[in-house]
Structures are given as structure tokens and as C-alpha cells.
Length: 292
Length: 62
Image (tube, rainbow over all chains, first blue to last red; front, side, top):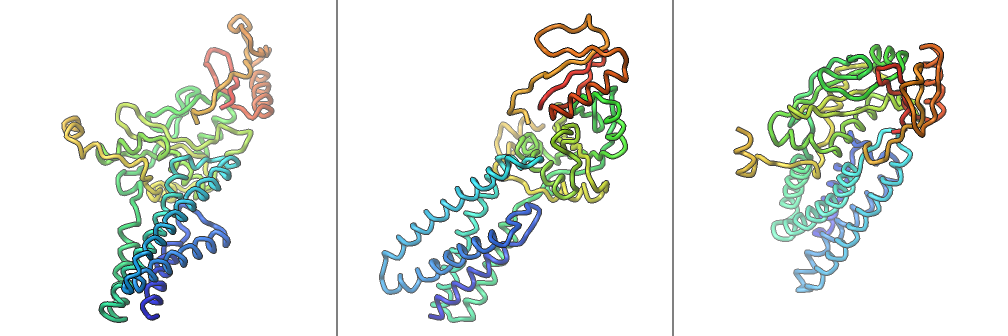
């Protein structure tokens, strides 16, 4: 009994600690928390129960784990569908890549929880309760640090940019965005808009910024944190991220409600790096030769 | 963002010799009238005003 309990508790604790509201701003409602908490509890119970079952030479216990895996995949589909439905009424889109990333993370975290429960149970059985506590702490630490994922700030330098107009063309530094026709709107943008430059630190980062999904994630996060003046009938105020085709640098333009450069830079830096956008051309020989 | 098709919904100009074709064309007498017409049209159509910098404004749904 102690074996199962220790494994389950360790699993649940992992899930709770991974459920904090962060820059993804999701899930932001109590029912979301409850459904993910319950699934985490089920996953950890399954992982923990498997150990005593195996000790009784009851090898069919593993088929239950396979069943659980099937369920978690289902969760991923449900999360994806929910987020895609919500996307339609959003002014600043998350983008499909970001949604896929969130859905995948929810699935993966359940496996993580199940693994934590399983290994903690083994420790409890082989070496007693204190070994289980130690193992649980190590695994939770591992989940918190190594599964955290990187941010834009880790691979790019984010510096303030200058919003300006070349006649009617809106630019941040040298990167142009769009033609803004009405002089009234141009004046407002000059007064209230903010721009930042996102400079990739190496070729891997440049390839990641090339991904439109990653750039949508950046504009979405910036608009979410800073507020955005965009309205249905004011497409001019849509936050945009455009690339300098020659250097690979990306400029961000936004009409924030809170005009604060320091917090905009922080918001961009803390945007999660999407797994789907992350590419590493420098890992290949051709990429390294091209980088010279 | 790039996925949906873009359409020119209307053209507003002070010089009617520069525009022709199968779009609604609004001819304004002055710069003020051009800006005002463009603004009203854009607000009604939830679209954006762009400037060709030759006296022609056009309205695009993005």
C-alpha cells in the first residue's frame, strides 16, 4: 500500500507543480485545472499500481499502461480542438504551431507523471520510503528544470526598435511592414506604437525565427501581456512580426495599451520557443559549411 | 495572415484618369474628402486603407 501511495503522491505533486499559469496563459480557468489534475492523478495511480502488479508476476499490468497512453493521445486531440475553436474569435491569433505545441505538452506531461509514479514506486519497494522520497524529489526537479523548454530570450537578442514612416510605409528600423493610408492613423501610430528588433544569436536561431508559427506566437504573447489597441474595424493596429530577408532579423510592431518598452522586451524574451519551429541547421555538415 | 485571399474592395482617388476596372471607384474633389471617404469605407468594411502615393487610396480586406 505504501508503495502505491508514495508513487501516486509523487506523480500528483509533479502534475500540480507543472500546472502553473505562465506566459501561455492556458488553462486559465478552474475547470481546466480540474480536468488536468484528475488526469494526472489517474496517470500517477496507473504508474504506481504497475509496480506491485509486476512483482506478483502479473505482466498483463503493462497493457493497462498502453491503454492509458491511448487516453492521453485523446487528450491531445481534445486540447487541440478546443484551442482551434477558441482561435476563431481571437483578434491576435495564437497560430496552429503554438496550439500544437500546447496540446503536445499536455500529452507529454501525463507520460512524465506516469513515469515519475512508476520509478518512485520501484524505489519505495526496493529501498523503503525514504529512498522513494529522495527519488521523487530528484524526478520532480528533473521535470521542472529539463522539461521547462527554452524561450526566445535564450536564442535571440531583443533590443528596442524605432517606429518610423517612409512616406506611407510603416517601418521598424529598416524593416518595412505595410502601407498605412490615412494620415490620422499614421500620426497615432507614430505617437503610440512600440517596436523591437529580435536579433538571432546564431544560424539555428535565424532558422527558428524564419518560422511564421513562431512569429505568430511572439505577436500573440506580446499582445496578451501588453494589451493591444487592435479592433475589428482597425486592422492597422494588428501586431506584426516581419523579417529582414537579408539578415534574418525580425522586427515586431505593436500598438500596446501599456506603452512600456522594458516590459515589451521582457514579454518577447519570455515567449516560449515552439518545438515545431525549432530547427538546427548547424547540426548538419552542410549547415556548418554554409555558416562560414 | 497570408492564408486568406486579399481583395481590393474600393479605390478612392482625386484623379479619375488613373483608375479603371471592375472595382468601385470613388472620386473625391479634395484631399480631405478623399481621406474622409476612405475612413468611412474602411470602417464599414472592416478593412484597411493603403496609399499608392500617387493620389490614390485603396481599401483592402486582409
